Length: 291
Image 1: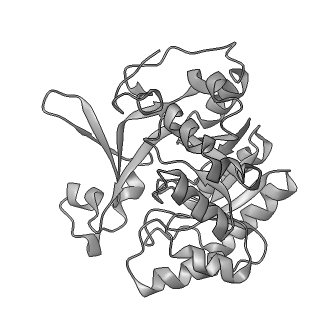
Image 2: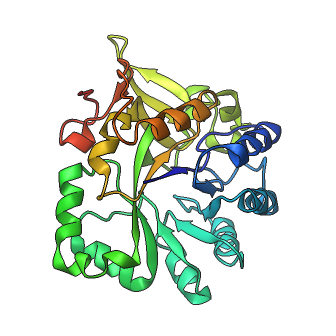
């Protein structure tokens, strides 16, 4: 089973991003996703910058995939998405179905991201027929649910045409909005946000009245308050999942890559902290932490 590194979901300075990917080139990950998927106003890096990084990672032996925006709100964002789809070299992760016609037109291999709603075998087969060769499951899909989908004849007959990837570490993106909650938390209108989310390299936490962390604000994206962590479920994924995704964090990402690699066979499990969860995979409430 392979390890993938998802796109950076937070807004980091350009120098930090470049330094991070220099470490990625030397790390034990198999596949890397690059691109801004949350907010088009985050312009520390442009497409040319990501393509430069993509070439460096490919030379280091990594599979590279460019990720498109998840919520498209303006014609300029559509134009940017089209440039990603027509990059001419690298696979593309479509985080909005609007990218798929461009990808099919240009004959580009593509991944369907977890924000695209694929919850049954009929939908999955439809995307395979469109040319999808990688699928990132929705966050709330359980192991049993995934197993049931893949066993359906419509899917099992084409199972060799696509790979399945599961989000296995990070704060889960739950929703996207036309409003910017990080800006609002600083009493700023969205159009005058001054890119304040760069001050929160791992998002801004939201707590309930009893002090429990319930959400993380990341610009227009709302994430889970707990960090989803499936490191102890890796053995149960063997034969079902082709790749697990780790979402980049400001600190500790490369330590987690090593821990995941070491526990592929279940020989080095970890005790999850109170700020972590794994409920969805186990058919429980998403915030639940189970053994």
